Length: 272
Image 1 (cartoon, helix red, strand yellow):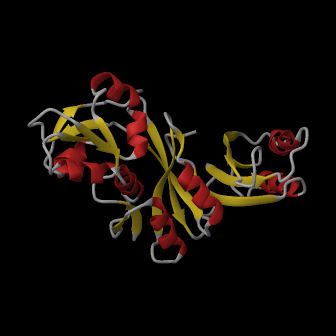
Image 2: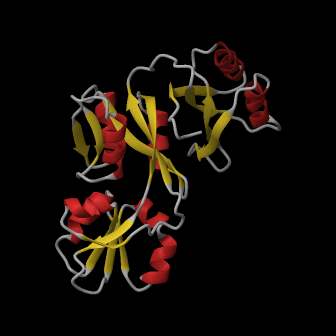
């Protein structure tokens, strides 16, 4: 069983279907939020869970990053999904209210400002939930995928309304066991330095640079211990069991207060 954000028609569902296309027995289970998906994986109630971790327009999905830091799950795969937002609705009246998930609304900010400056913007738990609500009232519209409009009997009122056409969301697949190395892998980890000192972050990054390990992403998140205190989320090419990666992590262990490997997994074929 694979957990995704529901109800039916979300981008998470689409990412899960893409990842599991060679798994004929896979069954999707729908949840109300990302935390519920990951907690079901952690509890062993699911084989895997698919959640978004970053978007090419809006950056990190911070709630998911924070959950990965504190939960006992690992990343076992990734899916890079092109996102094509549409404005969908019944199309029977003027639009006074536009609903969607906060990420979708943020990705369409310019379109909304230019085309519906007076509309009330409301957030929902998912794009498909927004479409479901838009079924009920002619003055409401939702931002969702074209396929979601069809699923809920709505019309596509405008296509490709995201602020940049090449809009991609990276989803991760969470499980409980790190998969074996494939030779084309990525490792995600979190590093906490604890005390700020000149060159502290540089000394961590040097462990990778000296071994010619390519970093594909580095991002900071507040530790919530005070201003200027951060966790650093790092993605790198290679598997945690590769000798070079092992050596780098050993070097970091001596310099950092905490290091947590979030997972090693095959790189998406269409990703960095």
